[in-house]
Length: 499
Image 1 (spheres, one colour):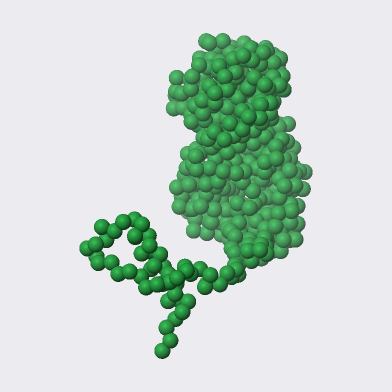
Image 2: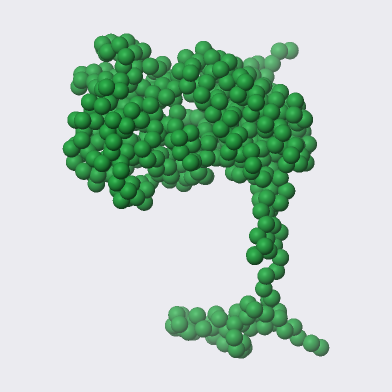
């Protein structure tokens, strides 16, 4: 009897977890040298197949740019490898001689990796490498619109690891994708951790699965341009960040917030760099097309070029337009383009000064980007400091394209495609996720002081308090009684009675 599709996918999920569990029992005993060899082979495979995987991703999903996906695949393999290659993830990874502590790394086990349609191959390379670096195994759940390219990337990572001496099954991927199978991967008793990148609904499901999870929320990144900024450079960087892979990175710029005194000049630089500023009636057309009535992004326009969107809504734009810019007056449901748009559309706001700009940026973040990222273009370090101290985000990026800066390509942040949003954004981590987030650390601790050193001076018998008098005792007296009890208890341990 032939099984229904959902039952077949459910069984496949269980088989993949079983194979990953078996492989993890072996790889957890690898030395640091063995693990580093495995990850190096995976790096080489990612670099060698970066272009082919990029072509597969663009062909299957219809999103993004081939050349930018090539770069993302290369970044996920080469640059991530450079960052993690010298990390100690096996055995004693830290020794504190002063405090007499050893820290010992232990893998978490089998990881479930949730993969988005916007970055379906680069995220696989990145997650597979950081999982194996920390002696874990990983099973991927692809987005239904990107199954083939995601599966191919996972296959390449597994083959490379096996070629380096790892057991088969260290990297697995669903072939028959269903919600039942994804839920099984997230809730299976042999899965120890979920590494989730995707839509808000899926990330919330990961956190509610009963398993430890590392997930990321939406970006809605504001780009604030302050009066001291190099405006030509700011305009260029904003458009580079927004149009990289047609805006599919969650850290890409979503709205420009410009001080009014420099806004007109900034607009001219933006136009020279390829921005087209929409007229009011065009803003309405693009708003209705890009953002659906339920507030979500129209999947038909995710990762599309400006020319495609313009044709879709029926407006004429210059031939070499890179990005559509919509002047807006507010934030919220009446201004649909004030929300996250994973495509080549930007909002644009004018503010009187940096104080007002600060408030506008917070409005945008509260509309869907709390905890994620903000970019500021400025040469005024005091204002940059204020933004760093006051904004409810964990990545403040300065004078750089946001999408490239947040993932660590143009900044000193850890190279990563999982950008934690902290508790403010509903995430359990506020950093760029690395192999160090995928290990447990146990500690060996020696005594550094004797028990006698813990006692209070002048121990005495504790006072006896009648039960009906407790409410009348002053706080100061109660504190003294508590200290007496502690002293007496310690003395009883340190000076046991003799018969």
